[in-house]
Image (cartoon, rainbow, N blue to C red):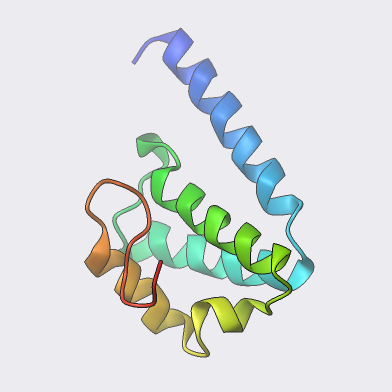
Length: 100
């Protein structure tokens, strides 16, 4: 990995974090829990970019824009939502059993 790749990765990550911070507070809290879960047991590595995580932010931005609460987007069982994401990962971002 070159210096240029590292710098580009940091820029992408900072832009991603800015998108998360722009979400309503309840969405931010759930997002951070999902992120921790995916980093701990899921298919997401810090060095792999933000594909799946960006897909979650896209979904959350759409939900917030339409006036939905975060649990209306994820369902009341956020861990099951995460498990569905992990099962549905096909390298193309978010896909899963809850219409993601």
